[in-house]
Image (spheres, rainbow, N blue to C red):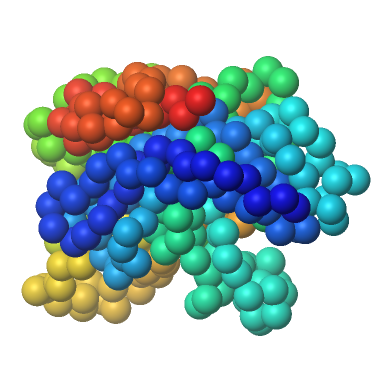
Length: 349
Ligand SMILES: [Zn+2]
């Protein structure tokens, strides 16, 4: 492939200090034979982008790093080995696993999200908050015609929620499930748990009123207090909820989860944060509770989520709080961080 000349603006995190993000010019990508050149259309802002902007993320970031991993786009060039499958003009979404070891034992069983050498767009390798990105064809999915590019950019958080609420939880119809945290992942977990046939409540803080109001559109109850009342008095036997999905990223919320889960129940933990815990984990033993982590997603989840969105069974539009051009990324970040919307989306081209 001939190398493209020139540069493009990219939302770049350049250091660990708070607010170390700015637009920087970066070189244009060159694609390999198994990659496509993607013209980014929309990029969702993730909680993890906000964490890097605030300098309080849980992992080591290789600075400088272009942010963004929730993106839809249009193929502009195809590498020689993928031209039979993809064509310029195709509308696609990309997964986040930019770099994996194809021979790792986890990749070989389809769980490349758990391959220790995986490096994700916008977290460990340059991401999509720019105009053109080289993407391996193995992580591309077609966007159904009825799905807008803005909606398609939300496929990634939907897949995080699907993994946490479907694959890594054990919801049966009629279960009572409590979701902790009304951010994008929490609300989407509520949507997934409803689709599984559970009775769902989502809990937040008093300042989360706007997000909780949006969560209500997914046919779940919303709580700012009285969590224990819903968990114990709201059920048939006062023993607690069947499952808790913790999306908060605050370690202390595990204490709430352990308290309200019933004996032989489960906790699916998808939010993560670096704070140590200063409480006993004994309730997990005493109640015989399954504590299950949930990380990222993989190919089969993406295909299902796109069908759910395409069919209308999963409506992501209430999650989108606004669309900003790339150069107004700061306003998009601040508005989302302020909690007056659930998610910001950037328009890259
Ligand atoms: Zn994300």
